View (cartoon, rainbow, N blue to C red):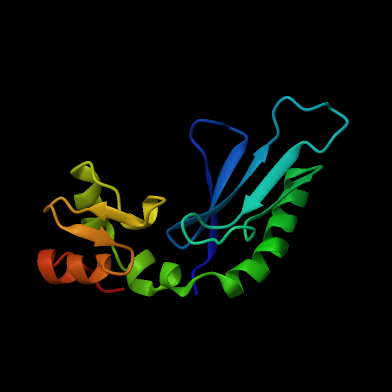
Length: 146
């Protein structure tokens, strides 16, 4: 099972994106423009695409550590009910750097990076979340073993 990892968002020093494997699973950030006597941190967890309406959870916390703990607690329920195609080994972590970077270098995004779950390959083929692994493996031979 993938781990949750935290990466600082490069455009804000007080914002972290949380990833579940290679999938953006949420955010923890300092709130902006609110009174000093209210919670200073906010968090949200959920996948887009992948979450159904009402599944994404969010809240506010007094400290970063509290926000992190609340994110983890809220996420436990979500990780058990999230749609399995997002977590299939070949979809999230099986597309190793050669496949991902070939797409990105051509100016294309992977289907799981777009709200529609669909994209175009640099070869011109239509891609979906469920078909990207087979396409890259069979047409381009760019899958690396894990």
